[in-house]
Image 1 (cartoon, one colour):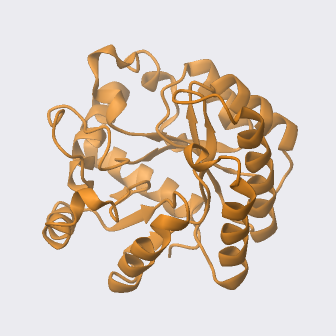
Image 2 (cartoon, rainbow, N blue to C red; image 1 turned 90 degrees about the horizontal axis):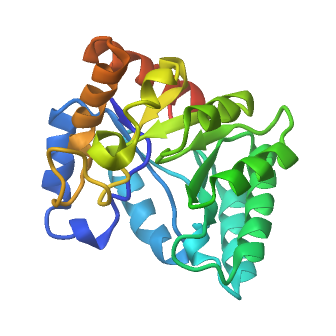
Image 3 (cartoon, helix red, strand yellow; image 1 turned 30 degrees about the vertical axis):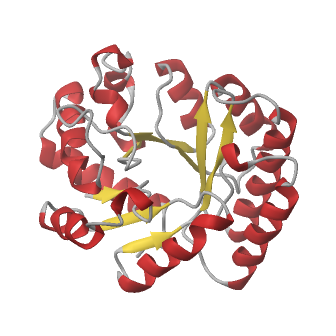
Length: 255
């Protein structure tokens, strides 16, 4: 399996990071893709990529919750890194209207700029969208051309929104939310083609059932695969195989 979205550089793992990763590898996690947040997360992310070459891969982007009045400075750092070396994706980036709506227009501007970088470098865009799905899809429709593709991570939208994302050449990242009884995904996941799905944990956040209340980690991706298997009424082996193929096709630099 591939965990396509994991913040394993988080301080939440500082006491047992090596053991946590060894457990993940023993549970069948072959690769872990790390989204950037802002300038503060880069060093830790790069160190893990260097230590676990061919297993842990870095993205480069600016998270919408890090978009503030000086977001141009943060974007300059992202742009500089993208020009210096290869990354598997631009991300994570996007729109987040849950915590603070002060910088909505700046978030949209940062979205447009990062989408153009993804096109320029021929890599996927990894989108975070919270309380902003309509605006996210609207922006993607505005920016869409044959060079733009990617994934909507931590998807918690409707079947109709999943279909619109498919038409925009975006995969669906499924994580712990699909295991929550009140998540509403029991009627949505069955409607999403397995060929459009990649798996993720978004650790250390959003632990799946039966690990709610605990720190999330890559080894827990098996619970997400199990839930997709239940919803799609196919074997977990089939889920693991197809979602891994999807992830490698989408993140083609992570070979």
